[in-house]
Amino acid sequence: VGGGPGGLTCAALLAKWGLKTLLLEKNETTGGKAITPTNKDGFSYELGPKLQVPAQGPGFAQAFRELGIESELKPLPLTTAGLAYRGPSGKYKLGALPATTGLEPQPLFDLWDLAPKDTEPALKLMIDMAMMPPEQLNALDEMTTAEWLAGMDNVPWGLYSYMAMHANASLAEPIDLVSASEQVRIMQDIALRGAAGYYVGGFGRVLNDLAKAIKANGGDIRTRTRVDRIRVENGRVTAVVTGDDVFKAPIVVSDAGLQPTVLKLVGEDEFDSGYLNYVKGLVPGWSFTGVKYFLKKKVLEYPMYNIWSDDTWLTLERFRKQRTGKVEDEVMMFATVPSNFDPSMAPAGKQCIVAGTICSPDPSAKEIKTLWDKMDQMWDKLYPGVMDALMYKEVEGPAEVSEFTRDHVLPGQGGECVGLAQIVGQCGKYQPSPKAPILGLYYVGADVGPPGMGTHKASSAGINVARMVLRQYQMQQALV
Ligand SMILES: Cc1cc2nc3c(=O)[nH]c(=O)nc-3n(C[C@H](O)[C@H](O)[C@H](O)COP(=O)(O)OP(=O)(O)OC[C@H]3O[C@@H](n4cnc5c(N)ncnc54)[C@H](O)[C@@H]3O)c2cc1C
Image 1 (cartoon, rainbow, N blue to C red):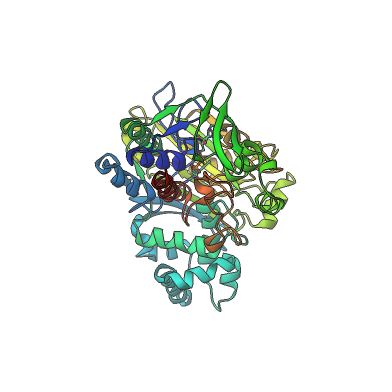
Image 2: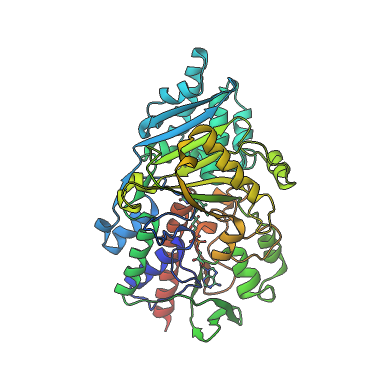
């Protein structure tokens, strides 16, 4: 149920392994939050700014290898990132950093105006993060990044501010809620596994290849087919129900989101109150609202940009303030320029910038439009050529993300950027299980994936769940 990165990966592997596989997707195309549309003018772009972390060995690479189509993946490494940071000096400093910065941090130190005495502690902390062994990482499941850093003697401010921006940009969480184990693992991916990357044709092209693999291996895909109900009889799944059909199935894997699957597709009556309370108590991740700027000429030089200052990354307190409509003058931004990775993604001589900033996942959030205006102002202030070359723009916020992907079933939920929040209590050993307490029902996608950034988490979950389903299927076959 649902063809996002998690559902597609899972279905492709199951089809390859010989299971009779049907994927039902409510939208016109599969791809979920990671589609790459092409508009009437020939621009191809992502729903919001999107990069692959880790660049080396993401879930997609493992799945493509397993499917025997590894040469089709066509990854494109990030070479240089454009950064803009306003620190204690009060002025924005613009920088261009090679993607090897994880290994050679001096350009970052220059951007932060790091005092010579702070260089060594910053370097030590960055190396400690990069080299942290798994058992030490697991212990960080229990604390937020802010709590972890507070326990240290000397954390240089530039590095703290970078980590806080990073929690927003990579995990769509605040530094005072995000699980330190999740964040440090992503820092390791960036430092040791190729920084970040993209794909020829974008994420959507990768996902189309997975859809092709489903069909090539005998599976079926029906788009524009919303699943209204997952039918359960005597504690086990028996079918999925759409507007027109009932599809009998002994195993159902849902990529529709854990909370929508339990509360809407299966229904509360099928679960005990303890599990229902657990599901209702899970916290959705925050959202990222995006603006696509379609430019009549090339303006930005690099494929990726991070723009932040010490007062633009959201903490829980700043988030609460933003929710009351008090939006600060400036916002943090993460942006990608798809055609600076793959020139075929924009008409010759033109450029599309996909920019975003962190926000509430609440589809009815009122402050989103103000954030779009603030993003325009940030470009004007820091990279004025962008607004000068603007032909038109497209926007989307949590309402559009929810409409396009997961249903709104709880207050403030629906427009999550990644999935369930990667916060203390929901990560590492507290990660929600992909196996529902109903025989034959599994969840897939970012909600139940191992640590990592969105698409990596979702596609890795697809691989894990496919293995679980295969085992259940083989056991059932052995008993017949
Ligand atoms: C603005 C933005 C920026 C992001 N940036 C990054 C990034 O830089 N790097 C990164 O790795 N990730 C990023 N992500 C996150 C990433 O896109 C998601 O984590 C990932 O797509 C989640 O995959 P999924 O399979 O869990 O579900 P989704 O992508 O949400 O897909 C779920 C699918 O299920 C379908 N569906 C739902 N309900 C039904 C139903 N009842 N019947 C049929 N079909 C149904 C939906 O239509 C959808 O196609 C970003 C996301 C956003 C929104």
